[in-house]
Length: 397
Image (cartoon, rainbow, N blue to C red; front, side, top):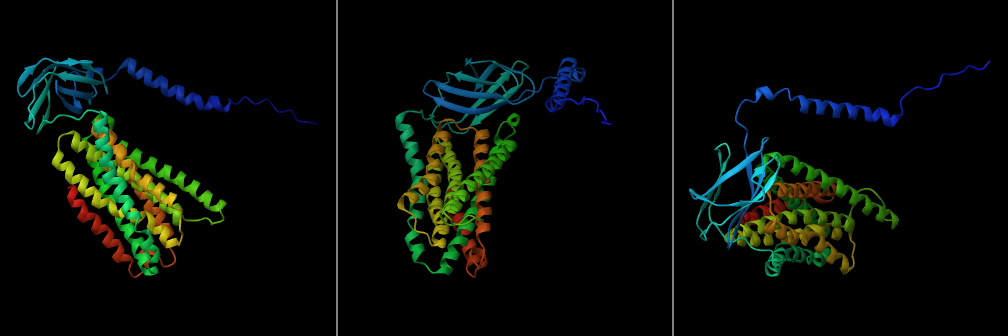
């Protein structure tokens, strides 16, 4: 006799997954409507405004602001060097995370300090001090070309010079190839430390409401995931050409290193562009020279795995490696010169830090069988690479 089973009364899987989301939404709505903590806020509002950009033009001063606190902020008056000035604004009341652009027709003087104070509707003042006013470059063809040349000078040309050492590396003995492989690790280790320091500094300078540290971490994780995906593509091509699997080596590893260095050079371009846009021409000059010296060894770091593997790629690969590593410096110079923001710069440096960390991991995996750091010249190569980057980095301090 067959046993009849009762029909299933279980909820569909999709509905079971949606119900918790509906409950969370209802909970948030009830909390916002009831506002149970409103009686605890019989205090003045928390007013905070971040100056994301201060732009000096022929007509005066332009401020790009963001509400950096939990409460709305209404800007009632503006003082420049302790004097009240008329101003126009896209919006005088900024809600949470809201933005506004203020234009002040103040006749500033080149090289002199400027103190700007925003007076809110509650009488609070929020100040911004500019040590030396300077005309902010406009995004015209001439300025774009100038910044592009700077990107070439700090990114593309130094990397190309380093890549030009490839023929010498091919003639070197195995022990010296191992030395230069370890040198690559030292170079990238310094870049990782330097990038983390720069990124955390920018994260601290970003508006608190945007959480610069999280942006930095998000960029780092994004870079790691992106390079892992790139590694899978490169590994698939190696298997397709019967070159085996496992850790990346040779040309595949060179492309991965070039991608990581390219993201780092994006950050360097940001630094140079921002320094010049803020009128720090002397600092910009030292940054350009420092980064140019700094980056000559990056090309060497890119081609060292190729020489160590004994491959002789076509010239088009060397051009592609130089472009991947160097061209982002041009993009960084444009972004730094015209749309620089500490928050987005923290994100860019996070990308660079994650990329370099992932590249170091891949190089470490490729160092097996008596190569790189585990050879007699390995420690010397690592120290030499780290120290070279430290000394040339003094030009950018």
